[in-house]
Each structure stands twice: as structure tokens, then as C-alpha cells.
Length: 385
Image 1 (cartoon, rainbow, N blue to C red):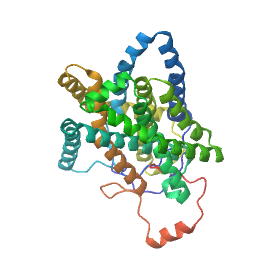
Image 2: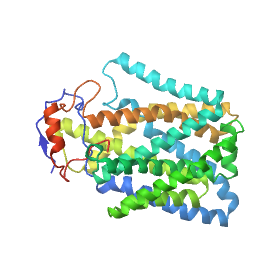
Image 3: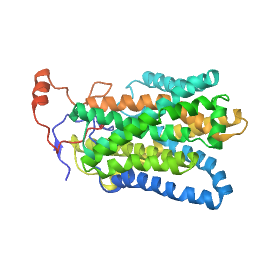
Image 4: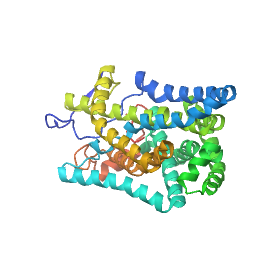
């Protein structure tokens, strides 16, 4: 049963502006965050190469379509970046400025990519890899309870290797093993300079491989089966399956799905805290997740429609070629999206919102005493773990 601690009552009609604690990863949440992504990666890695061997023509034609479909399915996961209480300012003017800045960053990234394709594309790819890796590190902390505040120097080093491994695999491997479809896309994005992009991706395969070995070895030592399987499955997915369907499966059923699950869990906890008048712990009920999903659908509808309209506009500018337009949209949206997610996670880790409300920051003496005290294994999971 959920427990409640003393806390000042929030204003009626809105969730409390406190730092929510992610609920235990069990039941439907665990299926969405762990089982579905791993099963999807394994299935695509096994089925798509077989289909390509048996019916090469239709399989090759399906790759670009699957990529566009995955982009469309994945767009909503970033549609509510500016609606998170930990990031959203209180005043309407500040919210308008924040929204303008968000859209301005997307437009600036598109213009920069057109003005200096090769260097800007390289920066966007590195940013995407970092964002993917950090997102999976957050999921790891949620799943294992190893929050950043509870990590020693060794854990932080392993976390850095995890970011490199799980972020580098979906970016570096498909580029390093680029087939004709990927080469043509890179030629469009980099204004014909696909060779340097492929060479750069091949150059980082060694550090990515070392990071994968470190993550797997540590996970095996800790008897963390999921932690050991994740990088191996991602490596198998991008080595065995053609790059476009492999990335489609990763973006739609791994990265986007996990982020969406975290958004729903946080929203459900915020509303549960608001109903109880304090901070609660314990697993979420299916009804709480259904209500959170309904709220998300309403909030994400307009931003998603705007993103889809931008995709259509980019495709028209590209002469009707929707696949490069979809990749340009994903890469350029990553600029403000990655920043928004990082700022939100930082606010959640600190336990305070930009408006200054949230968990009271302990005194310096209390923090010093807390740092000396042993950490209980049953401590609640930090959001930005």
C-alpha cells in the first residue's frame, strides 16, 4: 500500500510542484520498459535478415517505410517537453519565451544543417548518441535503484561506459556498416560528403566496443541479466539487420517507448501525490497509468500535429522525398529535446522546480551527516537515475 509522508498541501486543481519519485518498475511498466524493447530488438534482428534473404526486393523497399513510420510513432515522446512542471515557468510570458526558444533551436539546427552540412551533421549525430545513451542510463537507474546520488566513482565510470555503449551502438554501427540506402541518405544530408561520416563512424567503433565489453562484464559480475543482454541485443540488431529497419525498431520500440513510459509514470505519481496531499511510494495501478496515458494523449496531440506538419513541409522542400526529411526532423528536434530532458532530469534529481517549490534542501550539516550514513538498499529510486 502507498505510504504518505508529511508535506505542505498543494494548491487545489494542479499537481504538487515537488520532485516525484519513480514508482517500482513492475507489472505493465516493466513490460513496456524492459520486455517490449528487448523482444523487439531480438525479433527484428532475427526476422528482417531472413526476410531480406527470401524476398530481397520487398524487404529493401520496406526499410524506408519502416523508418518513416517509426519517426511518426516516436514523435509524441518529445511532444510534452515544455509541459513538464519541473521545466515549465509559472508566468505565461516566460512559457511563451520558452516555447519560442524551443522552436527557434529547431529552426536554427535546420538552417545550420543546410549551411554547413558535414560539420553540423557530425555534431547532431554526437548529440543524438549522447541523448540515447543518457536515456538508457536513466532507465538502468530506475530498474536497479542505482541513482546518481548513490553512485561511487566506480559506478560513475561504469555509467559513462553505459552511455557510450548504448548511445554509440544505434548511431555508429548503422553508419559504419552503411548500405546503399544509408549512403544515399548521408549524401543528401551531408551534401554528398557521405564518406567522411562513414569513416568517422568506423573510427569510433573501437571505443564503443570497449564500452560494451565493460558494461557486459560489470553486469555479469553483478548478476544483472538485463544489463548484460541490452548492449549485446543492440549490437546484434544493428549488425544483423539492415540499418533502416534496425534504427526504426530502436527508435520506435526502444528509445521512444522507454521515454514515454517514464513520462507516464512521473505524471501518474504527480497526480497521486496531489490526491493524497503528500509524497507517496508504491507500485502504480493500471487505472493510474490509463489516466496518465489519456492526459498525455491530450497534451501531446497539438505538438505532435505541429511536428508532423513540419515533416510534410520538409518533405516538400526536399522534392517529396520523405525519408531524408524524417531524419532531418529527428536530428534537429533532438537539439531542444535533449536539452529539455537533461534540464528536467537535473531538476528532478535536485528535488526542486524552477519556481523554487519542492523538497526542502537540507542544511550543509545535514548533508554532511547524510553523506556519512550508509545507504539503504530499500531507498526510493531517484528520477534521474
